[in-house]
Image (cartoon, rainbow, N blue to C red):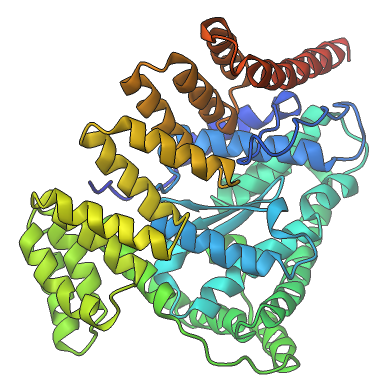
Length: 492
């Protein structure tokens, strides 16, 4: 099912600013909830914005975006962005585990670095990029903001302010990355007479992020000219945008001087070797199909591209046909691509879905099973297969498969959601509540997660009691730290 294009509005992000004011008390939760203990809360009265506080803010932002339906949940698209992002992060000095990449359902051409290593990529940016290196160039730029801790440095230059005011400043900067006018107004209101100093500092941050981002691109084996090429095309097309200037240009002003500096920097890097860009192209095609309206006009556009020799457009056409319920047509459209690359996971995913929708359930199951032998742990194939098995009344198989994934260290919110569904179907109260607790933890709802684990502990026959109790103690320890931090904040 497609969802309409959604732009975050000023009202939504005004509510986000209010949310961020209390973020010094927000719990820290990572996606890999079983692999590391919950950390201690940082002192909310500290004069320096610590990495822990930054992470807490980022988690709250993710929770807000998810609640408003702005996080893109397509596993193939998000997995591609995560894979590309982690390739870049590995050459940033941070390491991929320190960064969370996510896709924002927003047609604006933009990306942003939020506190705590959270990097959001708008769907509009993916569609506007003409090569993987262009997309990676913007991602590397935002990654450089994180590696240089520009959020914390912005706070430090503002002086020793109360933590609530410091968080308001960071909220203003984040707002600026989404709505330039609103962000500048919020920033001016927060830091008053030092606004020009702050703006100058942010400009310096942008230039530093360009330099470091190009270095990250080159060291990741991507074309370092991807960044200046993208900037240049946006700058040349400014006159075409009229009042609808892309958000990237509002929040990352691109000048001739900046493009020239980025080009000079890129020319100093070793030339990149040619790369297979098919995964990037298929991701963009998938996004075009899923974000567009599956009507006759969309079908006609994809067919025209195929007739012009763009054979990969068959993938988008098959997706559009599948969304309209034309399952057999989708299989026929996809067949030439499958013949060329029978093991390509993107094609297998669409083929298996079309087989299931057309009633060939055995064929779909065989496709998933065979594909997972080639790509064990593949997120999109695993979750789609689990969904199919649940619909066929095989929750025990789903539980077995996904518990193996979690045990192997492949933690994912969708896995836990499906484990909860499987546990409910099996009447496994303990398993369902434990899985639901992990979903709540990932979403940042610690109190609710603790309550789920208490209920699981009461229902347990003793087999998993020790593990449940250990997990519950972690959460309760963190909740107590939050309460102490809240008490200190009230005293101040």
